[in-house]
Length: 351
Image 1: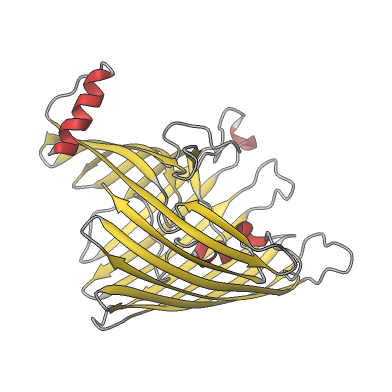
Image 2 (image 1 turned 90 degrees about the vertical axis):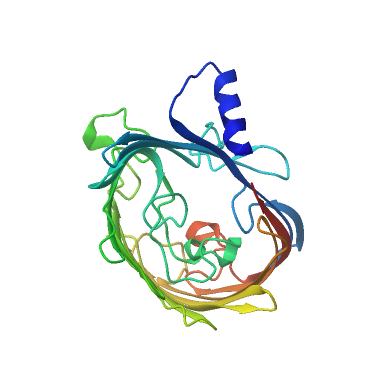
């Protein structure tokens, strides 16, 4: 109630009037201390923001139109709690007010249609996420699924459809008319296409997602494809999971990524552990002496303990190793730090 009244006051102060809508202010504050070491580099000690959950604040609302129809919105901004700057921007300088998600949607018996800046289907974040199968999700930097596997992140100029729930199954489709901008002619914009389904019923939480980005005007203008499969079943005492990704691009990288993980209640909190293995081939232009074979493996673990309904403390440790074509590339695959470890402790507060 307090959050709703505060959001109403914010809207009123900005000169915006609304009626018969439910508006909520919400957010996450996540801060941690992380020690990292990459082979042949100095050890770092950092105060990091968003190590477990991206720090953010947002406003969301929904208006009931009657006859089971509603219109709603989500406006969500990322920020760095360590220095107060914005985060999750798209232009290289973290610009943009609501850069995590800015969405207007209509929903009813047909499902939901949303428009705006949206997280991709396998991006692991935001309201349209379908990604499953990895116990650590997209948390913990090098422990994130999208650190070793590839991901398409957040998309501008997007439209997404989510079907109604059919006995635990939901179908989603998404299109971006320009992942960054769409002010050029259609054939010169970079387009995203995604389709996927998620099955959540009883102990099951499974998903299958196909995505493509056509890379118009990029150095390698061939379309890049991703398939993500996630399987998991909650047995109560333990929830084992399996994740797999195949990504490929003509004259580029072709990778297979496998992940086995599990989470289990322990000592009043939750323990998470996972191991991944990547093997693939680079069919693009190689540096002198660089192998076209790509190999990597990781092992990651975390423990999360709730201090209250809103505040959680956590600890994390992980090691990521790369060899063959990845051996010397410490920023390969979405800036994962290969051949090194991370250890961190922190706290997350939700409001």
